[in-house]
Length: 309
Image: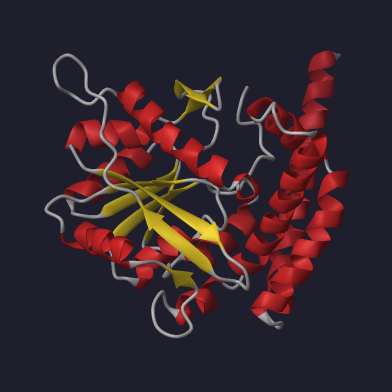
């Protein structure tokens, strides 16, 4: 009886998934076209205000509250809710910016209408990445608009490969990839073949970038905000294999649709007794950088997922 029930539950779920996939294939492009009709900054303000109202009604709000209370036990309930309001605000803006990535990229990262403001130090570090003897490994986190580091790399002509997690819904995944292609270098979906693809990219001289602040049940254990969690070791494993420099890139949201960017100095990898890069220790060093970023702008990080499990 239980086996038959599980079978029919699986069948119903499959039919619903296919139905939703077909609906999304027709409705999502129309919705994207509608959003793109409006001024980017104005639409971003409207969506941010909407998410500040709707977000607290969702289950993810409770997850975010629990995460923040554990990470910042010294903060009052009012301070936690203020941070969460900023999280929803940021997420609403990211949604609008995502469907306008081509327009943001067209503004450039320099010049009078640039969307990304960075100083001479960042320009020098970026030039060093482009002209270095070895390709670099780049990590970032779900801060502000986490799509922009890859967009900037494309604007500045950096040969790059970007690891991404393909959405489960096939039609939506196709739309996401089509909007990113041409702006972010070579897109590499996460999965069994990803490490090999990225390794070949490094051998060919490509810079490789990836997010490093998500839960990976097969990952290595690190400490983040004083609590253990798991993270994918891939970037450290690639560094161990190729002895590539590792840099962090973060985006910070500014008022009026602008951002500032930061490229860290090369993160010093932890090494074992034989002098080879220690994967777990290096992932801890990278996670420490991410924690510093999040502490500086907690309202711009994605607290809404189950980072600690």
